[in-house]
Length: 456
Image (cartoon, rainbow, N blue to C red; front, top):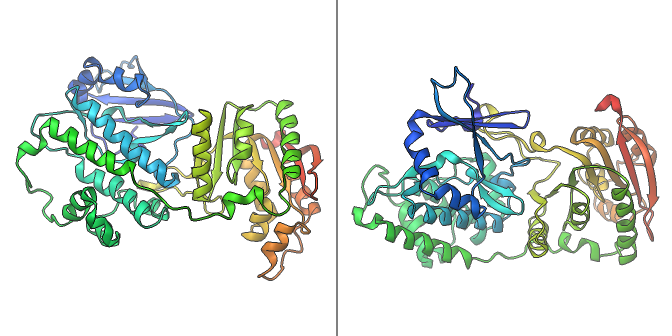
């Protein structure tokens, strides 16, 4: 009955079946669950948008002997994973978890886990979703999740800000984090002069015996823990990251991608969005999210996927400034999408497994896939059919386009089959062509396709 997605918790587990989520709470967690609900902690966290709400539902007769209660949490349509976040999102996760802990202490509880996998981004903000991660706090006891927090959140976060944001992506092959000695050895010398990193990474890494009581229990007094967490938060808030990729974040201001082209493309897409019915958009290769934001005005939800860290962060800034709650960003490369990993490759689902839309946008990306990454057009069409249940809009960029010429400058042109004819044939195997429109001042064309019923 238990699934790999929650096998680590002995106090209960989650079952996910066809978008129906159930959380079973074991009798061993009964007292802690009651304190969570009766102390006011649950209501406080939910009211501040920090915890996913749930409702209790009736147990079946055969379940009553095994479980204390059964919950139906609010369903999160898309759960992004830590290695699909920008460095700023990691910062938000760290601060959110510590803030939740501070609220917990005031209600006689504390988080028993310090993993980033208990949080995600939903409706435009960071949210915690593991209802069974709350433990009763005993005055003077250490925070049991302290080392896990340092190995899985604080350490990776420091590597991203003090070395390179790419460290976050590398965590997909180390879902339990890195040993503190490894993290310490890869941080630059200047981090030894940061009091938070000196104590919680470098000095912490020097402690070999995890079972040894390091300091007096007085240091773990609730008031001192609050001060400790606040110091970490204040330090993290001042960490700054340098921009690494001005090319892609300036894409629409360069060469042929002029205001006229952009205006024409915007007008065409607005008309098509207004005359079609869809709920969830997948914007693949979204760049700075210009068209993700446009689609958000017509869709219930937009999943904006981009491999460039700075582009994703720029979009997140724009989302925050506009207070858009229906766009979720995903830092990922569709050529090398996030794989399934963990126990039996079922503990953490792959990106393709989690994607589900009824409108797919492939705008100004097909030449990057077919020529830049040498992906056959037939493969691209097949993937498009997999990702959308109804529509896809593709921008075909011809071989004569300056961007294609630019890609081919320093490589052999082996792409004789890259043509509009090949494109329409491959996509025609899975879709019916509804509309075609030319983008002003360019030879680019937009194609609106509807999935064949045989493929639905």
